[in-house]
Image 1 (tube, one colour):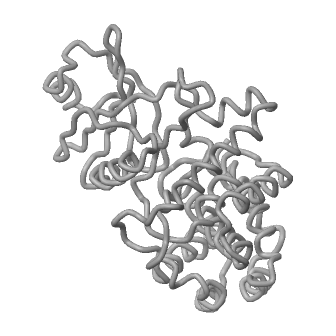
Image 2 (tube, rainbow, N blue to C red):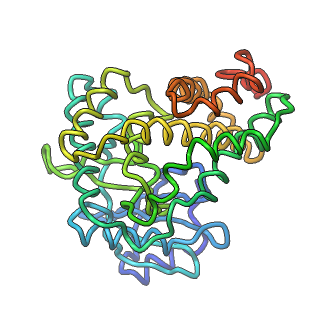
Length: 328
């Protein structure tokens, strides 16, 4: 990745005139990240180019999280007009790679990530928009807008939304009394901060946070689109969350509803990333996401949605169905 043209002047003005700018990561959005290195110190440069991206929600949520004692990156400098933000560097120990390299640590690290959510959910939500009916339905519609045409399917999109509307209705009031929902809380956005032993977990990629139901981020973590979470570990971590947070009798139903809702959205997003944005690597995740989705759809609360899927998307058009149309 080539750094943005304004990066050198921005860093000089921020007191980093001699910094090396090294590629670090990109993601599914227009945001890019670079590591900024000078002798004895380093930071991360976020490139969130307008008009596609706006770093202000990131800064707002980061301030909320750090104010509550959680580890979001500190902001070292920002030029909002250029979409450049210099933030604290949490190092290279990302949860995904750590647990893949040391499977014996998996359960312990996931337990820490679940405890962080339980601690966050003891606080009222940040001053954020709510996860409303309109937002839930807009997200699930991504499946019929992007995946179904890509799979060569003509489906009943109106009946699809009606089925979801009926199933999700019990959740529609939760935004008003909700918690901060980070929305992409999974193993590639959680850092094990170097030098902290079994201590702090660093949080990343929360600029799209909303106020909503506490089950949502658990779904993000335990039905991870990018890595397999064994069903036994998922069950163990849900029990761990229940013991920590006592979320109520309807929590398991909400978890299934939001699992299905999130996974349907991701199926649509990954199809869009391929068809619109030229990123075919996301197709490799679809079999995993479809497996989560089908498991969630087996819950009785999702019966109307499951019936729609059975009537509109045959088994051979699920899972890995799009791979044949992608370039090698």
